[in-house]
Length: 406
Image (cartoon, rainbow, N blue to C red; front, side):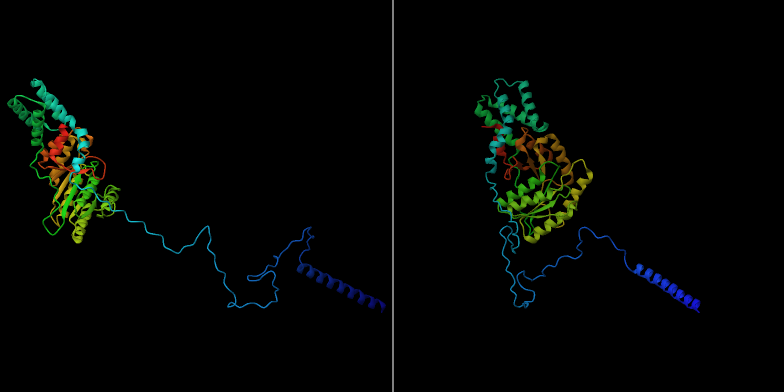
């Protein structure tokens, strides 16, 4: 009996021990592993801070104010960065200039012209003043005229007339020689040619002036200066920027127009020049302008395609109204090469007048005679400098006086 009781006790103890082990293992899986205490305690939550609207001195249990009772703070303007609500002012419009009247403009510029041109006149007077005018002297006179780009045929004509007049004259005082030379040079330059720039169409449409020329002759600048000449004479002008191949041409022409209050019609860079010229004339008609100036792209006279396009511009413009002027701009410093350019342009469009630029930069004033003989059209305008008002109507008397000097 005792043995049975002892066995039961042992069994109970064994069951209890096994149950303790199971419970212990479950508790070990549920509890995390204990870590060694750190020397510095770690703060896991941020310190409490007052909420928005709380004040440090106000107890938390004080009654809260409603939104109606709270006054919003008034913003004070900062001295360093003032806040303004005004819109930025628009850039001021360019000031309209009053161009110098064309009357007497060449007279004012005569001194500048004579500085570069009187070498021809003085050389001729010196040779004609020799006591004996032999064949060598007359050859020197011919050389002087040819060097000044007068041209072969005009030179021969002038020398023949001078020889006859001197022979008949007999006595040759300086005053007589000067008067003789002046008369013959005026005959050579031509005093009976119509040098007026046509700015009246005679129709209800504006006068249309197309400006053509080779690259680098000052064509766009001349167009802008011509606008100043016309405005100074009381004409209203519309500019057509049909030079779309040179990036700055339209901007340059528009600047010239803004100075005198003339509007510029332009298109995209690389656009169709004929289309822009057409639009310029259309706008000129709509505005009732007196004159439309069309600036074309500079053409190399050796490029057939470009010259054909120039003819297209002319044809398209004439769908509105006939052209009143086609002005060819030539650089006086190019001499005889300018005659080659003039000849090719004349084959494409009917040139009605010539503008000689940079005439103050060359001593070869004879190009005036040569180009007129080549084209059969007069020089109507001359450029005597880079100033805005240095484009003047060509006056034969003033030009010849500048040639022979005082």
